[in-house]
Length: 475
Ligand code: FES
Ligand code: FE
Image (cartoon, protein in one colour):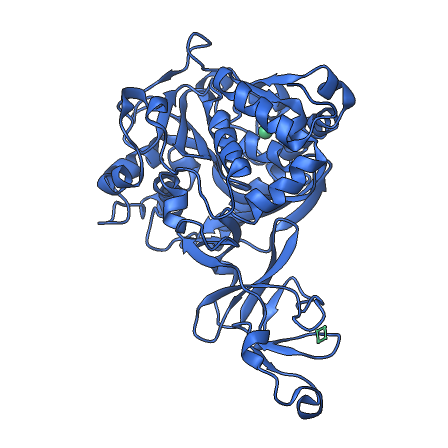
């Protein structure tokens, strides 16, 4: 039954009805009640990306990050363990950490001086004997995230004690994260602090786009080709795979049809570097290395709001170089989010190579970058229309049908060496439907219960399961 004004339940019912036929209600991008539920059911339950390990290499190093709208201190304690602590003093709830990053042995609350160590333990307060003599310090420490873990240097946390492990949550997506972050023993590091900028749009527009919206490149980013900043012609760029890696997590590759095809290899990272990329027993298979070698662009989203992008960029007419950015779409409300944007490099790149990659990233995927400025404007109008009365009363449902049976040229492939559901050619929107199926499951999940993290058999070409077990067998 249609409900006006739309509310969270009616929008989710429309989404459930629409997804199997490739339809998504426009109100998904602008409804306040839905957003309030996202904070609880998505951001307080899913594994959320917080930091890269290279940001806090030494004991005592910390960065201030967000889960949903809430601030958490991500700190490496004196034993080298990473803790994720809710930045709220247990005395009156004051924010304890007042810097974006630093190194410390203790956090001292500015209000009355309660002092916590890097594990979050309350260790003292001014005039302790007079004020609190006899108080149990043990039950007055900073509250911590329920679970913290990292994969390939990427630190995640969840507030939900009933959440699956990070590895289970990432599922098949871990195999693809290896293709960027696990190519050599040196590994990846961030280059500088994250850029931050606010966009008047809904956070899901960023996640949707980075799940694999390649179709927009020829229209929205046309000028990037016109100024010669991108080395792959549009038609060739659309050749590649769309992959539903595991429920919620999707990605897209632009990929050479064969290994001998001319064009960038390994996203155009310098050859001197890519010679250090090699399969390693139990860490990177020959299949994974082959996929990474042929890949020209990798763009993907780990649900809910963590995206990865590796691609070749031409800056100032020089040879293309690889750019690697990781970013979060940090919600502020249903109509605003903040982009946190890190540039990364491989640790064994020279400082010149890192500088070249960083400059190329700034010119394209940063607040003033040519790609970024293109992308943000349409997202603003998605949110404006998403909260409109017209979208509600006219029942505007958005078209997500590209690549469905009988629509377009994309088709599922059976011989893909990685986990998940793979389609050849990037004219396809199953990647976004995958994100919204899992979103729907999370939004309807009862507390303490988790949706199935394996694909439903009917979604899998050939009805073969591509879950955790299959992932293990592929390593
Ligand atoms: Fe932190 Fe009182 S609020 S010490
Ligand atoms: Fe774009």
